[in-house]
Amino acid sequence: MNRLAHHQGIHKFFTMLGFALYFSKPVMKHLVHVVDAMITKGFSGTLTDLHRWSFHPRHRTTLSHFFTKSPWDEEALLRKLQQWILHRVERNAKQENQPIFLSIDDTIFQKTKPSSQATHAIQGCDWHYSHTEKKLIWGHSLVWLMVHTMTQAFPFTFRLYDKATGKSKGELAIEMLSLLDVHRPVYVLMDSWHPSKALVEACLKKGFHVIAMLKTNRILYPKDIAIQAKQFARYIESNDTHLVTVGEERYRVYRYEGALNGLDDAVVLFAWKAGQPMTPEHLHCVLSTDRGLSDEDILLYYAERWSIECFFRQAKDQLKLDGYRVRGRRAAKRYWILVQLAYVYSLFESNSDFSDGLDLLRKRKGHSLVEFIYSAAKQTIPFDAVKKQLHVA
Image (cartoon, rainbow, N blue to C red; front, side):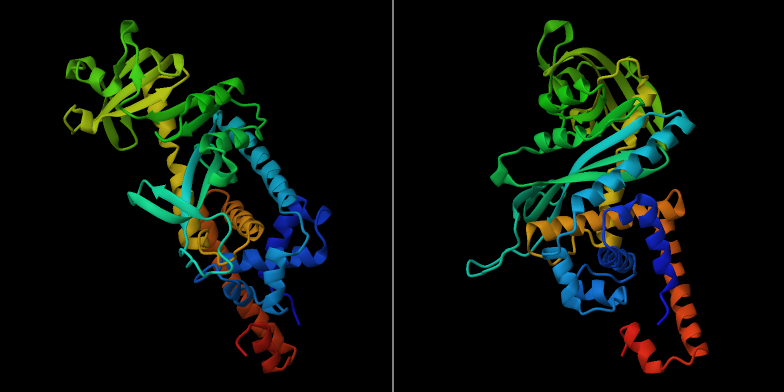
């Protein structure tokens, strides 16, 4: 039977990444089929869907074995992908004369809490507090690191937050940052839950600057007087601020330079949306360890953190990053890495936007199937054989 043409595009991408030097032909074939299934519209995350939507020629249990027991090295795959991402991002940053941004954030993959009688619970699951849903959720909590410029953002690596190991999310973030060796100015972007003293110090030690949202109860030291940011904000008048435009939003901004808890010298911007009252409830505090940046650039750079929120939403909605049904820790990790691979492949094919790339790949797959059926008919291949290969028998 003919090979499906769109599989060749995936294989070509893998060859460019250097996978053929690390993986056997059977493993390469599995990787192609898995990524093909993930980019298919309607994919739900199950092994059944992985088998069906990729037109895998072997029995479904071979896919289960591939995730749970097969000896292929998922860490080697991730390293090769990361090498390509860093090369791509550094090249883009140099061409555009931009810094490199690293965004750190965590997300929860909700799972069903097993009964006390369950013999095979999903490994690594626990209760985690969701800031979006304002409640505890059972599932996996992952800390992710994105690497990006202002024009393209790539998921780079992740760590499972497992309370049993005793490692905090900050320590996991520091671990991930240690993997990066780049030769451009770097800004690490975080929301208000992450900028601990240890994490900020780890960034500065590597020569990376930090831009992060701060909680409004953070202690500042204007004129060596300790005061919470929200208390200090009460002394700021409208005429102490100036207007800054970021995208379509305008903000009233006051710039504080000096010490704060955990840092001897930094910038904190007090920002209110222009149309809102200057009250503590509407206050946003943004930290920058780079005192040389203008207020506009600090807010503009911080807005780039939105890339990681987009990745979470797109990867969950379109590639079912949280839809897996595997139970083992290693199988789940392999699944997450392969979703990351499918996401980067979609970005690669569009050369800019994930959604555009995914649309392109889905159209290409549709054309490939039509060509396959047409070619089989011309070769008078029995109709039942075609239906069997396309899993509609």
